[in-house]
Image (tube, one colour):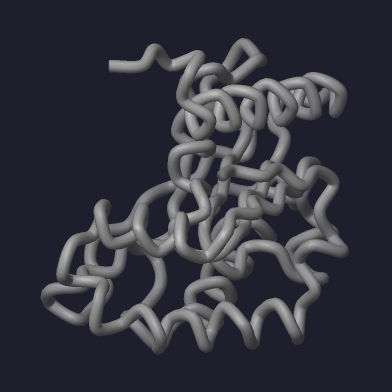
Length: 193
């Protein structure tokens, strides 16, 4: 089995996290907001999880996945709007935010989660980076990856549950790219093979 240093994906993920951690340190704030955007399967969740594990500041960040907020397969825009109103705006005003987890099986919102304004936030998910969210975020990351790799990783991760929705979700991603120009708002663009 090849070592991690021989694995181009693992190497790219590690390098991406190191670059983002450097950017977080450069902000010189105790509670920075990091947005991680990219298309499905690009590596956003892995990068966000690794960044939370290697967070370069004293107080651990709050890691929030938009997958926990989107209200179903057609809910990218609605989920991002909820994250903006319930997480990012309050955090930016030094207020406690509260967001609700979407229960995909029940098809409704479930328990609530508080967001402490004194701690950093890592918000990751498709659609996270828009003109409005960019104004509030300190570090804005776009994760780039080729479609065959993205699709393989997404379907390996989510199995047959995601397969029938791949094209439906991809249309929302394309609309986000055209309307919001997330790459243009990114302070860092990272590539995962």
